[in-house]
Each structure stands twice: as C-alpha cells, then as structure tokens.
Image (tube, rainbow, N blue to C red):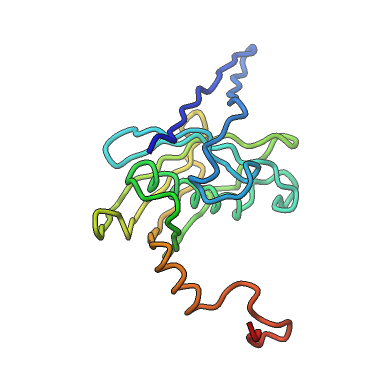
Length: 195
C-alpha cells in the first residue's frame, strides 16, 4: 500500500518567537475513515522506532466544539486519537482500507488545561503512538492495543490516551451492525423501526 505522505513543518523565527506551520496537506481521508477532507486532522505519519509512529496533527477550529471559546475540545482530542490509531494500523500493520474498526477501553485526557486555538487557526501538535500489543488472524491484525502521547512542537506533553482497536472484515462488521442495530433504526419514541 503506497499512501504514505510526508509533510515538512516550516520553522520561522521572528525575534524571540518561533512559529511552526504546516502546508495545508493532509493524509488521505480513507486512512482515517472520513468522508470529507475537512475532517482529517493528520498531516504526516512516519515510523520513528519499531512499533512507534510519529504523526503531524492539525486540529481545525470547530466553533461547535470549543467550550470555552478557543479551547481544543476533549472530543477533538479523542478524534485525534482515533485517527492516529486508524492511520497507523493501515500504514504500519497493513490492515486493508475497507476494513472497519471498533474501539474498546478508550482513555484520553489533557495533561493539564486543554490547549487553545489562536483565533480561528488550527491547533498544531505532534502525536506519538506506540503499539503495546496485537493479535493477528490470517495474517491481518484483528486486535491492536496502543498508547498515544500528544506533544507541542517543543516536546511539552499535551495529552495521553490508550485503548484497543479491533479490526473486523466487512462481513464481520455487517453482522456486528445487524446484532447491535443500526443508527437511525429507532423510531422517535425509542422503539425499533419496522425496516
């Protein structure tokens, strides 16, 4: 699979301030199971050490997720974790793009206060994701346990996360959806729909 994209971060020194910026390029949206490029937070992915991946992250300003105004929301942080795990399993472990995932035992927390957007600009940081363990079935990972660290450009810790990505074949996922019910399959009163 040749979907790898490497982006160079630009460092600009203005007096006593250092500003990092990233071209407006992102990873292929298929790697993170998104239907729109606007919802892709990742700009790069590189193998740093065996089983450790470094990813460039660009969290867009989402006014509906910024409480208080300007704060990078916990939901945006958790979505960053999800995208990092998916990209790493597809690129690093060779899981086919069309294979869906479920996630279990997810934790994500900011190290202290949530980072802040400057105006309406995206928030840039780096992620390091480490494979803690995995099981494979027929040569394809079906269970991947990972740990995540988000850091700013100076290496200051911003957040940590952990959890399990379970990879399913498309057929397994269809059965899973059928057993659990589909989104939108409930009527307004909460009872199952007839379809």
